[in-house]
Length: 423
Image (tube, rainbow, N blue to C red; front, side, top):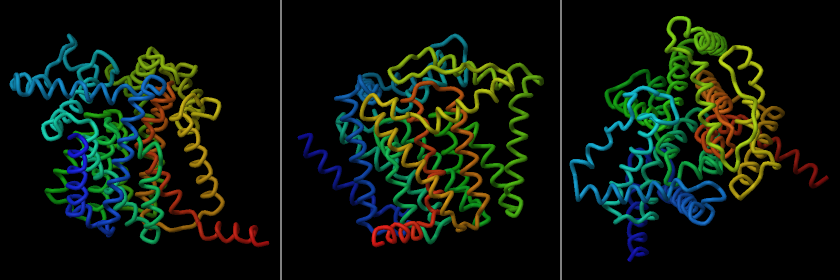
């Protein structure tokens, strides 16, 4: 019965994905769109399988724990509908709604898991609590994020549609973490759709009610599932909008704006103790350091001073952009992550040596780079667990890998390789 249910839903959503206007406007054929959905479903199934057979080794218990809790919520819906509807707003902590950025004893920290579990409980109504059928529904829902990014990037790089398509869907950690039953898929759906709305709003110089509603919804999604990303995303979008009006000075605008943000970051505490952002990051790091995992590595701890942040910047960059090294490999996921980083570094080197001009919207490119770097820095400053780092950074890899790949002269590289082969 479970296999039959899976097949029926697979056929249903393979048909449905070809009827959604947002997907059809990609210019991809129905068969290509179906293949993209199937790729996400297979990645989601693999995610669940890893959680079952390698959960302890790779620390992948969360996905099945969410599923188990969603079954409880599903049963609660029929036993006590009032509690089902109300428990999402219950705060079990004495500190009210404080500790907005805290990783423990915080309503806001619990909210992302509670919302996700509630969503899965809704899926269970239609799937009778089948994990792998839920993967199909989730893959369809989260496909909006990558498709939104593809539509943006293919418009920014119109002659590189194939390259954009490949690098939107073949980055291993991005595909893995945004396809499995975890929070990253919904988070990136929010990020992708928000970028899509702003990009085409700026291009068409209009922002209708539908786009405004979409931006509000996406903002709430990002706020719910990873609030620190929203804190970094909003300034980046605002600078992007300003730079878009003066594209010839886009580099200067972004550089000055981010210098200003850095000054505000360190000096706002003198206006109010509640705005002590350096201390908030230090506290975040301490909270994560208390969570010792198999992939945790020793680090130099931050202090809430300008000097400490400067001294720790190389460590933060190394943690978030270069690790895990091959020496850090302990299981199949860390091996995949190490190989992925090596491949991305190769792409970056090729970009440096075989770079070519190919984008008119420089403000958008700078938005992608500055946002990506700021998120990577924030991850490196606060995290010491390599597994968590790989998961956290997965959602922003396409934002800089796709531009690097699209602005690389692959034909020139191919010709050079052919000369050496047939020499």
